[in-house]
Image 1 (cartoon, rainbow, N blue to C red):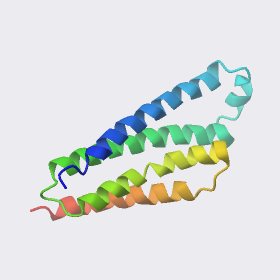
Image 2: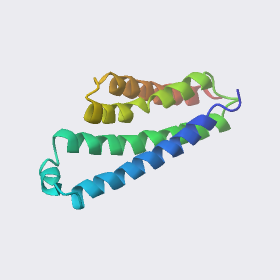
Image 3: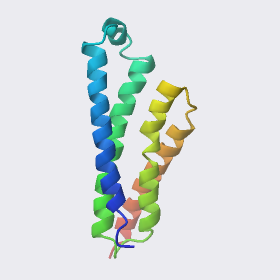
Length: 134
């Protein structure tokens, strides 16, 4: 049980790295791609907007997993439901991945919803768990 949180930290850093690399792709599309004018013109709607949304949420959710993992590791003995909180936080990464799946694979938004709800529940549950510490 003491290792819950370790995977949140590891997967959080790996996910953050992937979404940082994805940021380089977005820079390429904005500044260097052959059709960059069309990409820039669609800044606030469509695939461009959704791609930026995935990039930002991917890094935010990765960072939240790192923080949650760290807290779960260090307060493991004092917190309850550590495993559930850890798993919900990891499931939260489905949100930015789901946005990319929508953009590139025309997937339905179910993964976005599952991820958003999972991470939100994880964060709130962890907050209440810390309130219960004596």
